[in-house]
Image 1 (tube, rainbow, N blue to C red):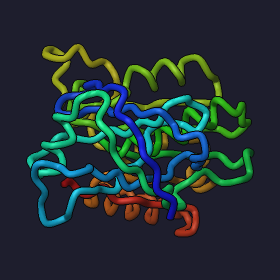
Image 2 (cartoon, one colour):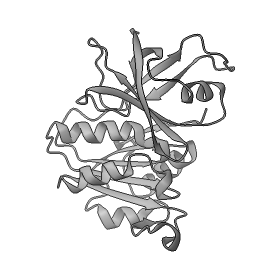
Image 3 (cartoon, one colour):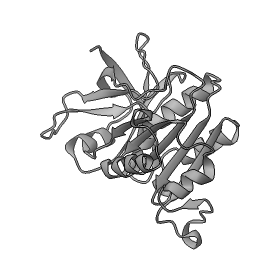
Length: 240
């Protein structure tokens, strides 16, 4: 797999305990929306049992000029070093990897079901589909505990508000309206929520990603609704 040198341009907080990292795109680097990379620290001051690199989904769309990844900041050595990097730091990028990508037929309707940092490959796919003026119908069910936990929420709300092909259903599982001002959906994604927004539950191609428990629950729900197994694509996000 190809290896590239990239320079950190900037970093930005995109949700509580969540940072986005932006890099110039190497001229020869190409990827499909939804794919991931391995990002490797060069001579880090500390490492852990998993080494100095991690697999991260590209949250940027191929149509965007920069490469961007986003991650929850946890207690691992990799995350500590990554979060403390200064702009101008060089890293190694390997990839791209993965087949969690949009179908080639632009007419195939797509439903995304994700939560938390699982939004990263979904952001890439959704924004790319809109940029390419695809005719496919896009529906995104995006679950978080509270609005401040939801990376890219406002950006995706605006993108879908500006395009009739896209519907964003953001839901909060622990948001109290009096405290957060949240007026949207509340609770977990379930059969009733899907029925409110989808005319035909069995027709779309589903992309389900996020924590393993969420992926397992959504796969089971779609199975109960009669969605064929081959119409459900999944990717699990483990914390590190």
